[in-house]
Amino acid sequence: MPRDSLSQTGRRILPRVIATGFTAAFLGDERTLREFVAGDLVARRSRTLGEVPVLTLINDSYDPLTERQLRVGVDKDPELIRQFTPFCGRPIAEIPDPYGCHGSYSDHFIEALVERLKRLDIHPVVLDTYQAYHRGSYAHYVSATLANYRRIQELLSESCHDYTIRNLFHVQCPKCLRIDGTEIEQVEPGAVAYRCARCGLDTRQDPGTLRGKLSWKLDCAARWNLYRIDTEVFSKDHLGEKGTLNVSRLVSLHFYGGHVPEIVSYGALRISRDLCGRLLAMLPPAMFKELLIEHLTRDLHVGPEYLENFARLYEVSPGVSYVAFVREELPRRALEVGRTLDSCSSHLNPRTVADRALVEHANRFSEFYYKRRHELRLPDLGAIAGAPGATVEAARDLLRHVLELRDGERPGAGELKVRIQSHLAGQPPAPGLYPFLRGVFGQQDGPSLTTLLAILPREYLATVHLVLSGPALALGTPGISNVDTERSEHRAA
Figure 1 (cartoon, rainbow, N blue to C red):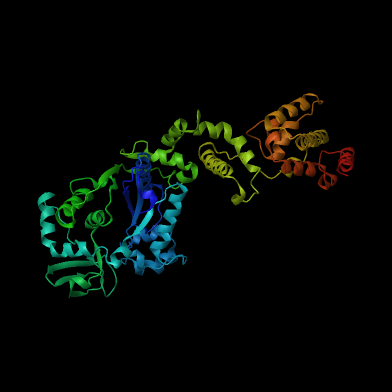
Figure 2 (tube, rainbow, N blue to C red; figure 1 turned 180 degrees about the vertical axis):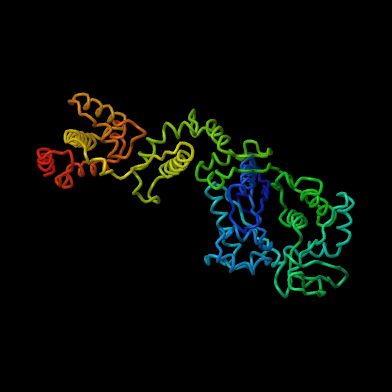
């Protein structure tokens, strides 16, 4: 037995299997993620109790592709819609990938979902329903269903106020291969009679040769027993008397083996149109997850005002809210991160990579709410045009002095800022120096000029100094005298 399956007392620790589910017919937006964030929460809490959690993502890849799902999946591309509409009604696992990069339609979108979850530090084990049916894993439950077809329908009708399911099993038509148009008309020992509304096939077939899948609520009960699921994450919509939980529980207890997991429920998630599709880009992963689980069982409607209020309370570091970080720290942090922009991410330490990610999320939040983006920008040559020669001269001298300071004892940013301030205090007044350099740097907002000079990359400042000293000015920049140009050429030499 593997060591990690033993407790310190030598007793075997069984994993806690936590189930989430999805039909990978499209990637969707953030509204599809609350279930997985809830499952991840259960897994993390389980781990703190000394358990071994296994978070599973059950991909219902035997489900038929609908036209609505197709439109969303191919981003309403008219050519792809035309090309793939004939596949609608077939299991998504059997449909080609519309983008040609995976083995099937299902594979394309489940991989995209897994990658999205990975960025949220959620790592489920994918269980593929189509493959499980074709391996025969569901055979026992299919046989039990067909053998008790009427009894199951009668039980549901008696227990759920005349509710029943017309098709307990969805046959995949052997003629047109669709699974959404067949209806079982009669089940008897040795034969199942069904008709396909898609292609008109009307036939009888031996139950042992049928291809298809159990209806959703029965499939749920079957997988509880098949995978011995300990915890299932469910939307509150599934908890009504005729909902998935109640129907699945009845079928499991009476026909499938009796296993019923613990249920963790979550409320509905609505996102305003202007935020839909933006949340993952605007919020750090930990913050996004906290937004979805803070009041897990409540219905949640995220609009701009709600999100900004949440960001005023959520702390990205002790005592610093996300809004405070965006408004006060981002302008400086964005420039500090800019020092490593040309470095290969694989060579950066994890802290630097995390800082980059935080800055990018915060910038998108800033753009949405405050219409500002903070980043290292190329020097603006247009800001030099028309500048007085004395201002350009003073800027050139200041940059030279800053470069000498940074090439010397290499003081920290705080000490460097003090030295720059001391230097400026001892220089004659230079009209327009501060706004001129801010314009050249493209940093009209954000940190003070002395802070900018202390934290902008050394190579960046050297480039600006070269521009202010170079041939471009010798061509006759308006406002710069010949004497100033001669001085520039002499110093450049």
